[in-house]
Amino acid sequence: MPCSDANVSNLASLSMKLLNQLLIDLY
Image (tube, rainbow, N blue to C red; front, side, top):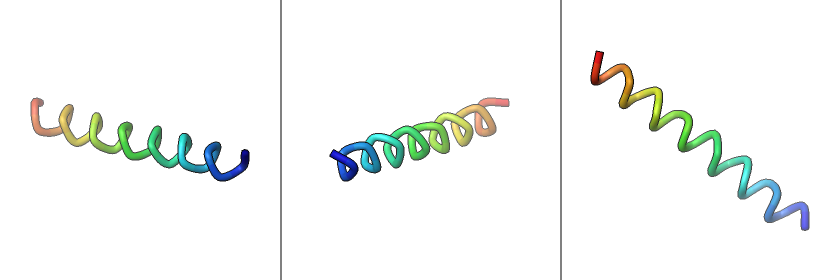
């Protein structure tokens, strides 16, 4: 299932971006 793998990696990178944004906003 290459499609689901791509979705998972996309979701992971997206959540990492959100986390980074949260950290930047907090500090």
